Image 1 (cartoon, helix red, strand yellow):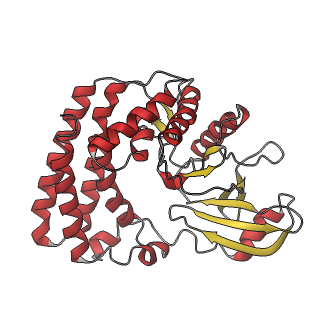
Image 2 (cartoon, one colour; image 1 turned 180 degrees about the horizontal axis):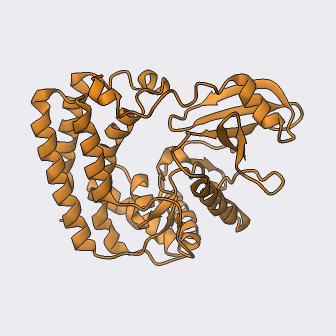
Length: 332
């Protein structure tokens, strides 16, 4: 990676001092008795571990990436999850100890959660999709009561521009791909503007913010939402579109079934269907910029060893071009 890229990365290795001793002490000091066993779980932005206890079920501890979010923003996420859980919504909230849910140790901020069982949701039947829609509608019914004050808002145009600029400034792109990357990002930005102009103003509410299937655990009772780390103010469709899969025709059928359950609790602004191209293309561009920003974190080169190759950028740009061609006809 070039010097120009390196100096713009997040400084240092943010979790360098997070040793097993620090982990276990952080849990013990809150009144839990650990047995010395821990298991690192898949997480890149933060660090998440399963901690075994002497005479109780294991706990999940999440250590938040330093400097990413303010305490106020994290506490808003916690309050949203706790409020949802108090209404019997299937959200995994933080554990409250002596009136607190956010704790500090050795310069790290962390929270504890009960371990939630479940499996990846296939959503392979209409009944499952209707059920998923019901629970998401209930979550958004709560989300519309008041907005977040300290957390971000969904802004496709700004995210696209900022992410593309990060990539261009990094000098990570092969020189012969720079012009092509700039051109496709400009085309995507125009498409985002078209989508937003077509849809017009729609309500912004508190949403999960990263509601892909990996953040849903399915049980016999239905879904359980986990990891509200990206909770923000945004349109309802921002939580729905990532649950759709397949061709446009298949997505339309799934959309109809999700909304059948959803609208048992709140009306869905159906014109937001036209925002899906903007949301999907923005996420694709943002993903590469996110890896680039975090690449000095030792977890990232291990997880994405192909990221610095010229082939990655060639394939990434081709995916953007292909998706742009497909999605610009999305609403036809």
